[in-house]
Amino acid sequence: MNTEKLRKSAFIIAVTVAVASANAENPFVQTCYTTDPAPMVHGDRLYVYTGHDEDNADFFWMQEWRVYSTDDMVNWTDHGSPLAIEDFSWGDDRAWAPQCVERNGKFYLYVPLHSSLSGTMAIGVAVGDTPVGPFKDAIGAPLVDGSWDYIDPTVFIDDDGQAYLYWGNPKLYYVKLNKDMVSFDGKVHVVEQTPEGFGEPKFVPMEADKKYFSTYTEGPWFYKRNGKYYMVYAAGGIPEHIGYSMSDSPTGPWKYKGVIMPQCDTNSFTNHSGIIDYKGKSYFFYHTGKLPGGGGFARSIAVEPFEYNADGTIPEIMPTDKGVAPVGTLNPFKRTEAETMAWSQGVGTEQNAETGVYVSDIHNGDFIKVANVNFGSGAPKKFGASVASALRGGTIEVRMDSIDGPLVAELPVSGTGGWENWRYVETDAKAEVPGVHDIYFLFKGRKGPKLFNLDYWMFK
Ligand code: FUB
Image 1 (cartoon, rainbow, N blue to C red):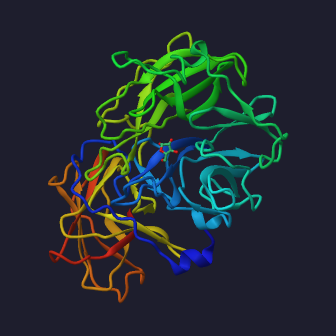
Image 2: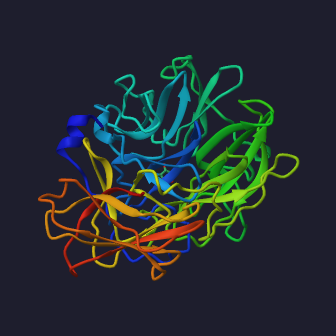
C-alpha cells in the first residue's frame, strides 16, 4: 500500500471483545482476525504473513494481508498491512493465503486473489525491500491466472538456487520459477495425487460410513529439511485436518506420511499450516476460530512447538491455548512499540504513514500484557509513553505479573488535541522490579468513550 493511500486511510482493525484468558498465548493475535499463517525467518526475527478475516463476514471476503514478527516467540509486533487488494490493478477481491520469501535482498510476497481479468482466482507476486514492505505488484499482472483452483501459493528456493512455486485447491500445481522470482519457465505442472502420495484415493465416490483421511485439499506448505522435501497441506475436505507427504526430490514422487493436526474442535472448518525452525526449535503455525466472536470466517493464527522424530517424520500436534514457551526476554529500557504484545483485551491497532502502527480503541478496563520482561537488577526510575488523545485521556497502570499485581507505575494521560497528536509523557516508577516478569498495562478512565492512543513505551 503506498504512502499516500496510508495517509488518507489510517484504518481501524479493532476487535473489541472480551478475550478468554490472559495466561494463554494462542491465538497469538487478539487485535483482529488473522488467517493462513506463513512464517519466515529473516535475521534474528521470525515474521508471520497472514490474511485478515473481516469482522461479521459470511465468506472469505478478505481485503488485505498483514505481517507480525517476534524475536522471543511470545511478544508479537503488529506491522500492520503492507499489501492490499487495491495494490493489484487487476485484482478485485479475496486476499487469501500469502507466503513471503527473500532472495538477493528482495522480499517476494506471493498471494492469491480474485482476478478481474479472468473472473477466477489468480496468483500475484509483490516485491519489497524489507520483510515488512511496503510491497508493490512486481509485474503488474498475475503470475498465473484463469482457474478457481489457483489459490494458496507456497514457495521454496532449493540449495541449487532453483525456486519452486506450488499452489492449488483441489489440484496441486507447481512451476519452476526463474531466478527473478517473478516469472517461470512457461510450464504449469499438475501433481498426480496417488493414494501412495497423498493418502486416500481422490475424485472417487465416498462411502457414507468410511472414515477418510488425508487427501490433499489446499494450503500447501513446501520446504526442505535435512535433505528431505516436505509437502504439508490441509486435507480431507471440509472440515479440514493437516496431513503431509515427503519426497527425496522437489517435484516428487511424494509419499504420504500421515496426519499432523487432526480435525479438532477449533471452531474453524478450515485449517492452514506453516512450519519453520527458529532459534533451534521447530514450530507449527495454523489457524482456529477461537477468539471470541470467531468462527469459520473469523479465524485466528496460533502456534505450537514440536520436535521432529529421528527419521524426520512429524509427530501429531494438537491445538492448545497455552502456545509456546519464550525463547528470549524483552528489554524494557529500550523503546518498545505498544503494538508488541503477548496478549491484549479490548484494544485494536491502526496505522498511518507517519507513526506506523499504534494501539487504538483503548477503553476503561482494557489491557495489554507484555511477557518475559527482563528488568535486570530491577530499579527503574521512570516510566514514559507516547500517547495521543482528542478527548480527556485517562491513566496507564503498569502492573507486575497479573492484571491486579503490584503497581509499578501509574501514568496520567491528558488530552493532546487529537488522536494522532503524539506527546511523550513520563512519571516516576513506584516499585523495584528485579528479574524477569510479565507486565500488564491496564487502562483506566471514563467509562464509555475511547481514552487515548498509545504508540510506544519505555522504562528509564
Ligand atoms: O483464507 C482463505 C482460504 O481459506 C485459504 O486460501 C485457504 O487455505 C483456507 O484457509
